[in-house]
Image (cartoon, rainbow, N blue to C red; front, top):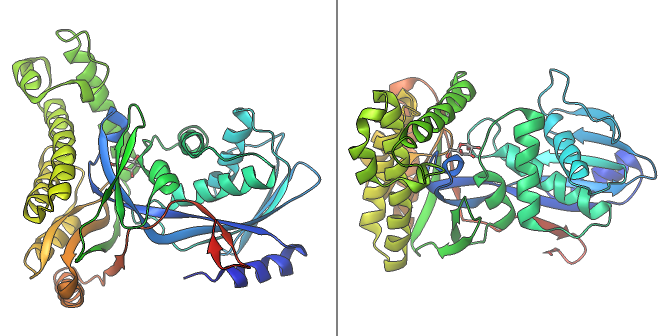
Length: 391
Ligand code: GLA
C-alpha cells in the first residue's frame, strides 16, 4: 500500500514543492461482462488498490509526468499533445489532459508524480485508475470543479481516442463513483446508477491467472464489431432497436435466421447477461447468496461458450474455485482472454480458499497465481495528508 506521506516527500525531492494527492481505484466486475458497450447493465465494485497522483500546478503549459512504477519521466506541452510514441503508459495521463482540454477545461501546466498499485495488465482496470486519478489531479490543480460523471466520460474518451482502446464506460465510471461496502449497478445508456450493499460475511477474492493472451485487445474489438453487426441485421425486422440492450431473448430467437451463427451466440450472451445483472441485484437485495452464485456460474459459461472471451487458465481457475468449501460463486472478470476471476467466498473460508486455489492452480499450470482479498472501496478521492482523511 502506498504511503501518501512518502509520496509527498518523493514529490518534494523531485520537484521542490508541496503537492496535492488524488487517488482512484481499480475495479472488479461482479457480473455484467461485455454489456457496457451494448448500452446494457453492469455491476462492478471499486477495489482497495489505487493509482495515486501527487500534483502541483506550474506557471506554463508544460506537463511533467513521472511514474514510480517504471521510474520514467515524460514531458509534454498542453498545446501540442500527441499520442505518437511506442511507450504505452504516458498515453493515459496525456490522453486525459487532451480530452479535458478538448472539452473546454483549460488546464495549467503541472508536475505530476504517479504511483499505481493496481496490478498492471490483469484486467483490474489499472488504466481507468490512472486516467481518473490524473484527471482529478489536473482539474483540481487548474481550479476546476470536478463533475464525476463528466470526468468518467472524458477518461473513456481519452482511452478510446488517444490511447486507441475501444473500452466501454464501466471502468472509469466505477473508479469515479464506487462506494465502500457496495457494488454499483450502472445503466450504461442513461448512466443512472444505484449502490447495492454487499452482504456481510462474504469477501471478494480476486484470483489472478497471471496470463494475458496477446490477442485480447484485437478480440475485444472483434466482439464489439460482432455485436454491432447483430444490431444492424436485427434492425431489418426490429427498426426501433439502437443496441442489443433493446432486444429481448424472445425477439432474438424469432429472428435467429437473420444472423450468422457466431453473431447469434454473441448476442445471446449480451442479452442473457443483461438479465443476469438485474437478477443478481434482486438476489443481493434479498440476501439470496445461492442465486448469486448460480448467476455467476451461468455468466462464466456464457462468456466461455457464447462469447468466447475466456481461456483455459480462467476456466481452470473457476473450476478449482468451485470445488472449494465456502465459495458462493466464481467467474472471469473484465475483458477476458486472461487476467482475473472474481470469487465470492464466505469470510471464514477465505484463508483455506486462497491456499487451496493457489496450490491447485500451480500444480495444474506451473504458474503461481496472485490472490487478492479486497473490500469494495470508495471511488476517486482527494487525500488530505494532514488530517489523514479523504475529502
Ligand atoms: C474491459 C473494458 C470495459 C468492459 C469490459 C468487459 O474491462 O474496459 O469497458 O467492456 O472489458 O465487460
